[in-house]
Image (tube, rainbow, N blue to C red; front, side, top):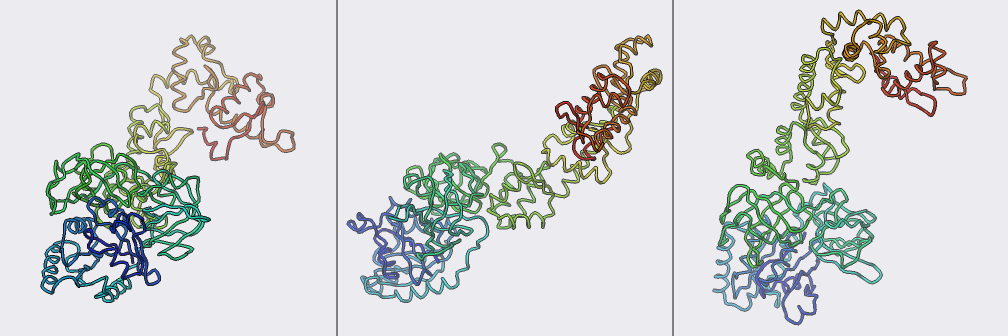
Length: 640
């Protein structure tokens, strides 16, 4: 269990920790000389069962106190009996309350220096101070660190609390908030801090975020003991190997699983202003943001009003001057621009906020659902309102949900999951059915608009029906509809199974006149100009008609102004396939123009045009001067 001290300067926090552990947390020369704590100190007791983070109490050092306050399990609020609660007692208590730290105890120190009446008065003052806070009702221990009074009872209580400490879930990726960095002779660079989630093992690859330095874990100390692995809820010292030095690492950075490297400079939160605050937080107010062990200047943009009054909670956006590592559920503290007052705090909800419509009612409702511990309601809300799908990888990253747990969540919710280059997209089953129907409706509308068309080209149908849908999702939709025979495919055209392209009556009459000319010479039909000359019909009229006949699949434009009847093209495709399938030749699997010329008894130029046409439509592919069938049988089903 990690115990964090809190309280006013000179109330005996460091002396108390020394009495409990035997360790003097003041390690700096200046701290020894001045007799006050300036930075975070660390101590361990009872074979690592208890870890202590000793924080400075001076009002100008609250930023250091905040670096140590996040990640602790238990608060030890220290109040001197002679002084009673003082300004930093109150500010530290407000911070503890804003961080949601409800487990704790009060140590009433220096009781040997006051009379019994003063002890009683101090107890009453403390009880009044704690009323209405997260620490209301916690036990109080009267102690004298110098004489040992009450130390044993306090120590026993801390051990009992440690015994009841629920092990923090190791679920999710590893996150370790750096609060200290140093180098050791013969060891190298070491970073210390509290593990917020996940687990780490010697040899693991990690990332130092936000800068994105890749590193390898060479060694681990967990709770001040050499270890092969460490995890959530432990104070860890990590020996890192990477292409960076001590000067590149600062307090506030994180060591994370590579999948969690997602530096951000804005995020949406649930913000709370303590009732003890003397002023509201106003929209776009400049603030100091303390998250993890970091202290970054930023602004608070309110989403539900122009000001959040003392005692009020409100959804907000935090905008930072530089990137930070943050995830859902992380607590943060806000101090004013001059860093002299704690003015608010809260919890991170969404690290991927939209750039527009942030105050829309549906967005605010989504954020309220994100404020719940269960990840399902917010995801269900997003799925219901985003017809084109939700980025599931982002949602899992925001909540730090490991891959296996994420898959289980998607499965339990009955989602349709699409694998894409940019990550997985998810659709509710209801919306998936809506998308299927939209696609079919768009195809039907196109058939009514252009009855002489075989169908709709795939990309055009996507633009008409579902322009915001990813290509991968559209392909999955069409695959399912084709498999269920709700959609059909003819060549590169998609259409409803019952649709048959038909020519207009006048075109049909003219086509019946011209069709015999193409069928008379199936492998060398006349060109447009020859048909016009033979029939006396204007060349443009012939050309326009054959283009429309090609739409309904009765002819193919093998070359410019050179149309072949569909039956002839199908026969030619079969002949090419047989040429490619011959055994015992030097060119097994391919066909040449001269061979096709001999096969059909026509000219070599026509044979070349036919093979080039098959290359163009994807039936074959050219290999130098030869042509090979492309792909499998299913990929060549283009002939109507």
